[in-house]
Length: 404
Image 1 (cartoon, rainbow, N blue to C red):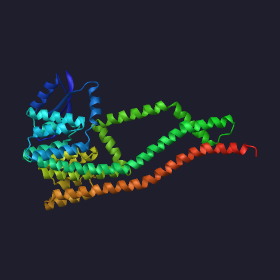
Image 2: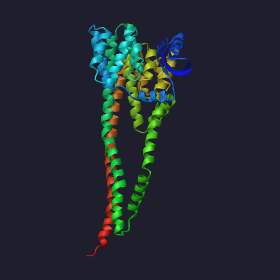
Image 3: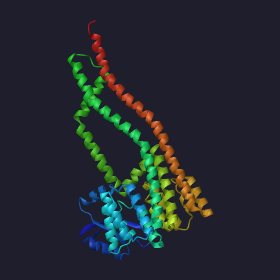
Image 4: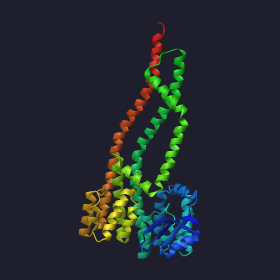
């Protein structure tokens, strides 16, 4: 009897993920179906299977490719093209190999009698839960092309804001990496070379040069330990992110960081407003939509707060009242949702919330970059200055000893 990981949906459309024991994958799937679950994936959990699965889960299809695929599929279905034929065309046109394989797998599943939503749910590395639920709502309501158009709009806005954040962060990161490379190269190669020359002339080394030399000796002797620490840190982070508890620990830590925490929180509520507007526009039931949105915010701690609010709504409370109970949810979001409930313009209000936080993310990132850039320049200057002093001070001592 083996252990199998599974992904399945109950009658309410809620995702269930877990591990079970069974004689085979077929038996595991049959057991889940007997419980009234719609099975999307069953995989054997071996000694190496789970770590490999976790590593592969981080290799996702490019979001830009997903936007293009969604927009083209919506256009083809709107033009009356059968969905299997549309997927075959997109499969042939796809330049990304992983996307092409995924489309082929989805098309083959539909040809065997599956629905689009049930087939894309089998590929969580490409189609996240919110995407799947929106497609399912479009299938149920008979407006699949409209739902796909809404999804494409959502993905384009999401891609735009993420790219703006990355663009603003690129320069500081490049400068930081450059500083580290220069520092390591200077300490490991340049300083020891000059020290050998100074010792041949029997020049007394100043304190800063001695300190640089000691650091160089440590780095050259223990470089393998640094490399090993980096590898262990990366693997450990991947393993930690692969578990719900580990992801929650990382997300909680990110929220506590001074400036980055503010950016993460604002980005999460920009996604909340935009994705909930898509939920309402697509006709997805509110409670089902909130369950999908909670997993699409990019931060599990904030997602948990939305899930708790959803449970309060299930007990009969309003959305604004349910959200107001969590200290993580800004009062501005609560007040805007209350206005939407009172006026019946919830979709417009949520779009306004998304626009507000998207601007806030953009402005915060720009302010952060404007502060960090001069600090990094000073850091580069400091590193270069220290190396220069470590090299030049002995040279000056040597010059002072020369006969005049």
